[in-house]
Length: 313
Image 1 (cartoon, one colour):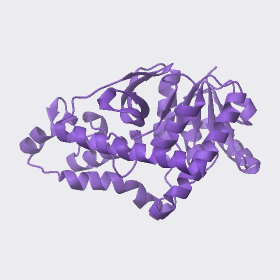
Image 2 (image 1 turned 30 degrees about the vertical axis):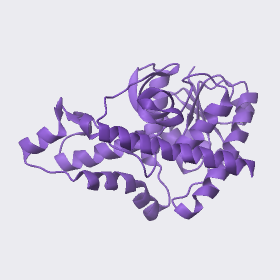
Image 3 (image 1 turned 120 degrees about the vertical axis):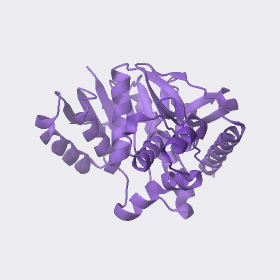
Image 4 (image 1 turned 60 degrees about the vertical axis):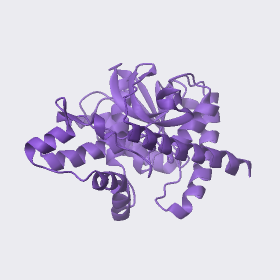
């Protein structure tokens, strides 16, 4: 039986649960939250929708102690903020919260795959790697998978092509220092430069980066949260793990020399299967792209250092 666990019943957690139900990503979806009334209501509401889902699925309210049998566990618990002034507060709150969660998860006997969604995603994922003791390849974050989807959406609108007609990803930090490896954007094997020349179109690279990076801010300003995109991405990741699809996603994973980086979690293309991260795909970046990726990793490392310092204070 495929059992999926979700920590956090707020906007993101509930939308991941709903998307997972629509994808029939799991047979049982457990939701854990300190606010028992909220999680009880979310579970009831989700179960009311199961009649119209493509497969048999059951949603359950769970305590941490009841998460031990989950094959995949997704963490969404954290303090959401888009304000630069409050990022240290967000970081220390979420860092302390995740360490508390990890201890409870360990006590439950959980041996599955842990996916972090909470922001700052790369820093929090690194803390889980350092403290979770869950095994190689079994801890990672959603990273720039959502940013990659946003890039695809932008390019689809700009070119008029369907999202799956081209390859385009965002790498590095799930944040302001993220970078686009332009040399690896391809349309049926043809590079973006060739497509622009053939079709008589022109894309301002800096404008694209800015648009993709600021999408979350615009959504947050308009409705106070992001939920559908991250819900769909995360549910798709869980489905791929349970189905052992060997699918490629751009996820925040621990690097051990890949791309010249170590002791940091950053968004890179990987193959995932039933055991989690099976392979990190190393793209041949241009010299400029490599510099941008290294700079992004440094920003994440600085965040990890700050997290360690704040938690000691």
